[in-house]
Amino acid sequence: MTHTRAAERRIAELREAPLDDATLEELVGLLLTSAVRRQLWLMFLDDQDRLSEAIMPTEDFPGDPHEPVVVDDLGPTTAACLLADRLGRICGAIEVTQLVLVWEREGDAAFGAEELAWAAAMSEEMGKSDVRLRAQFLLHNDGLRALAPGDGVARTMAP
Image 1 (tube, rainbow, N blue to C red):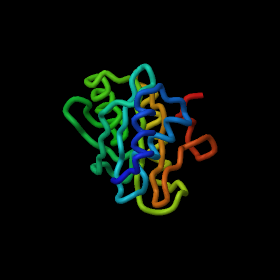
Image 2 (image 1 turned 90 degrees about the vertical axis):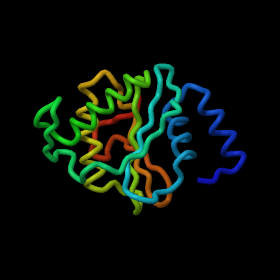
Image 3 (image 1 turned 180 degrees about the vertical axis):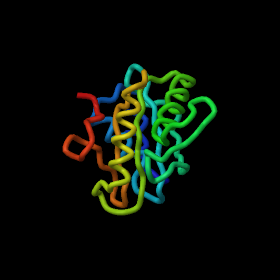
């Protein structure tokens, strides 16, 4: 991804400061500019609302967050529950307290059924953990859209 020098300076500036909702969305939009494929970006914030260096894409998640899975440590569960458990462990390992999810897929800015299902499931599952789900976004062909009240999922951004 290519950034202009002005964008690079702004990214560096935002990475040093505590992020409110508006600056968090600005930073995510500068880091991820347009959708390329279906994947989920994992971003982490510390207890001072600063973005961690750890930013991870993953493509390995099913279309349905309620898909049943069985794993040794959790037994029978759902894909969303498994993802929330693993994300909680990652957050503990890298010593962060907040999580940002960016659902990337090609297409327009309208939230689709899959994104809404995953967003709702992750909001519910992360609500059971010590890790705060700070925000969820959709990265589409033309940029970034924050999940907000009225999108069919409980608000995930800080009040």
